[in-house]
Image 1 (cartoon, rainbow, N blue to C red):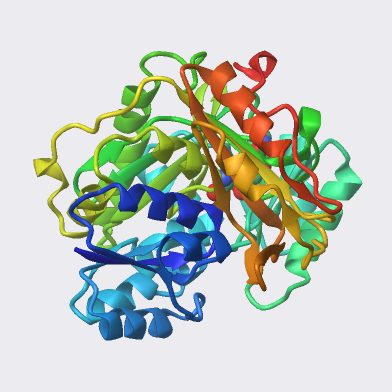
Image 2 (cartoon, helix red, strand yellow):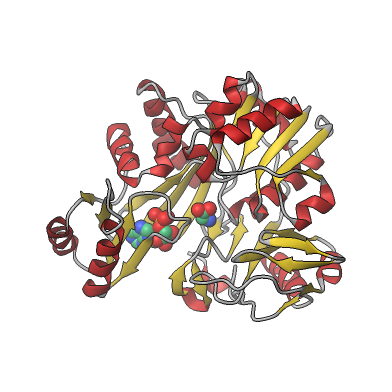
Amino acid sequence: MNILVIGSGAREHALVTALRLDTSVDRIICAPGNAGIARDVETCEVDATSAQAIGDLAAELKVDLVVIGPEVPLVAGAADAVRAHGIACFGPSAAAAQLEGSKAFAKQVMDEAGVDTARARVCEALDEVAAALDEFGAPHVVKDDGLAAGKGVVVTSDRDEAFAHARACLDRGGDARVVIEEYLDGPEVSLFGITDGTTIIPLEPAQDFKRAFDGDAGPNTGGMGAYSPLPWAPSDLVANVTEHVLEPMIDTMRERGTPFSGLLYAGLALTSKGIRVIEFNARFGDPETQVVLARLVTPLGQVLLAAATGTLADLPPLEWRTGAAVTVVIASKGYPESPVTGDLIYGLGEAGAIGGVSVLHAGTRAQGDGIVSAGGRVLSVTAVGDDIEAARTRAYEAIDCISLEGSHHRRDIAEAKRSG
Ligand code: AMP
Ligand code: GLY
C-alpha cells in the first residue's frame, strides 16, 4: 500500500514513524513534511491549505490512501477532493470537519446528541458578550468561533481581559462570532476515536499541557507536552466516553447526513459534576499523537485504511504496549506570540541515540548539513519507558542534549504531582 501523509508537524512525524513499522505499507510520501520527516521518507511540496492541490497530488502520485494531519485542509475540503479522485482518505469531509471548524456547530451537534458540555452562548455583538460574561461569572472562558491553532481561547478571571478578547474576535468582521461559556474545573483528558462513520474505536487516553510555561502559567499554545496512559484516571473512563460521547456524536453526524470518518478527538474535563466535553477536533492531536502512537502495537496503516474504507468493524481489537510514553516540546524563542526562527539546532544525534527516545520534528528545515528552526514548535522529544517516570527521565535526558538559541520547554511535563 502507498500512503500520502499531509502535514509538517511532529504529529505527522509520529504518523510516518508508526506507518514505517507497518509491513503492509510499501511507500510513504509526506507533503510538505519537515527536515526530520525528510530523513525518514520521501517528501514533496504541496500547498497544505489547498484542498485542490492535495487532491491533485494524491492523483498524480496514484497512492492508495491519503492521511490528512492538520485541521486547515480538512475544513477546506481536502478529504472531499481526494475522494473525488476515487482515492481512499483518512479524514472527515469539510461538512463533518465543522465539528472542529466551528465551536458553535459543535455545541449544536452535542446538544442533539445529548453529550454533556459547558453551557455556552454564541455571541455576535458586544452587548450579548457582556450579558453572557455576567450570566456565567468568573473564571471567564472566551473562544473564537473559528479555527485559531489552539490560541483562540482565553480563560481568565479578569472580566476586562475576557471582554477585550471577545472584542478582538468580533472585530475580525464578516460573520465573526465568539462563544462565551461556563468554566469547567477538573483535569483534562484527550481521547481519540478512529471511526469510519459507523464504528468508532477508542485509542488510549493522553493528557496535553496547553499553557506555555511551568505550573500552567502563560498563554495557551498548540500544546507543550503530553503523556499516556493516565494512571490516575477512572478505569471505566474510555468505555464511558465511548458510550456517552464518541458513539452518540458519530451517530448524530450520520443521521444529519454528514457522516464523520477519520479521527474524532474529544477534549474532556473530568469535573466535579462528571465528564464534560471541552472541544472536539477533527484530526489527531498534537502532541498527544506522539505518545499515543508510541504505544500502539497494531500496524497503523491497516487501521487507517479500514477507517477510510468503512471496514473498521472487521478489525481485531487494538494492541498496546505496556508502560508509558512522554513527549516534551521544544519551542522557539517568542512562541506562541512571535516565534523567532532560522537558528541552528545542536545535539539531535546525541538525543536520538538514547534508548527509547525518538526526536520527532515539527518546525524544522534543512540548511546545508545542519537543521534550523522553522516554526513555533520545533521538536517533540518523545520517550517510552516501563512507567511514566522512566519515560519522563529519558525524555528530559534527550532534551538536555539539544540546544537551540533562545528556545524554551516545560520542565514539569508528566510530573507526578499534576496527576488527577
Ligand atoms: P479549546 O481550544 O476549546 O480546547 O480550549 C483550549 C484550552 O482552554 C482547553 O484545553 C482548556 O484548558 C481551556 N478551556 C477551554 N474551555 C474551557 C472551559 N469551558 N473551562 C475551563 N477551561 C477551558
Ligand atoms: N493538543 C491539542 C490539539 O491538538 O489541538
